[in-house]
Length: 226
Ligand SMILES: Cc1cc2nc3c(=O)[nH]c(=O)nc-3n(C[C@H](O)[C@H](O)[C@H](O)COP(=O)(O)OP(=O)(O)OC[C@H]3O[C@@H](n4cnc5c(N)ncnc54)[C@H](O)[C@@H]3O)c2cc1C
Image (cartoon, rainbow, N blue to C red; front, side):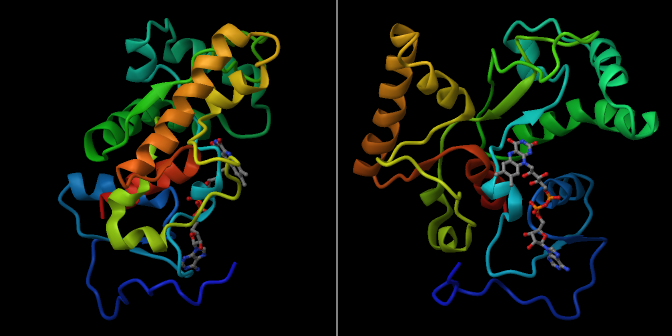
């Protein structure tokens, strides 16, 4: 990617910090946690762009029993998720994935408290192996609602862009994408979802907003915080 016209970020020299975070992908969440604990954090990034693979990803996060799921009516529990991971994760030590389970809820709460992101449950985005104990075909995946990256102001130039975009300006979440693919089979459900995404994208432009979704939205929401 050509980066000649991307302004350099601030250069950190001789900084004294409590937490040094290498890389501006999910590491930005570590900085949020540090901030809340009153620790001075510094994120260093080797490229001209902020967001890493996180900004290029689908931005969907699988975090069991989180408050977004509960508010949406999910009956998920950490015990069910433990049974599920116990059935499908064969190689990693249990203490590793239990640490993921035990800290997931707090991470989602932190994201909601400390960023401008509006997160939602992509209900119906099934677990990949729902037939296993604790598996759930209604899913546990959440993602960000479309986010206006122009709210980053001049810093928008330093946000790593998503690798793909729709042919017309419209933010496509993972949830939308599923329904777009079902347009021919379920037009009554899919069509309004597509229209809404188009309305957000094209309508947003009229108000100077550039709406994006997926990992680009997630990274932008984290970047906005800094
Ligand atoms: C197309 C695609 C779609 C995906 N979709 C999903 C999804 O929907 N859900 C999901 O959970 N996962 C998804 N993933 C995987 C997910 O994107 C990654 O696991 C996640 O982003 C990794 O986060 P990270 O913070 O470890 O790394 P990154 O987000 O890549 O951040 C690392 C940062 O560190 C910087 N860096 C590296 N070395 C140095 C150094 N020495 N000094 C300073 N900076 C350095 C890099 O430049 C980069 O900016 C997807 C991946 C891809 C490629």
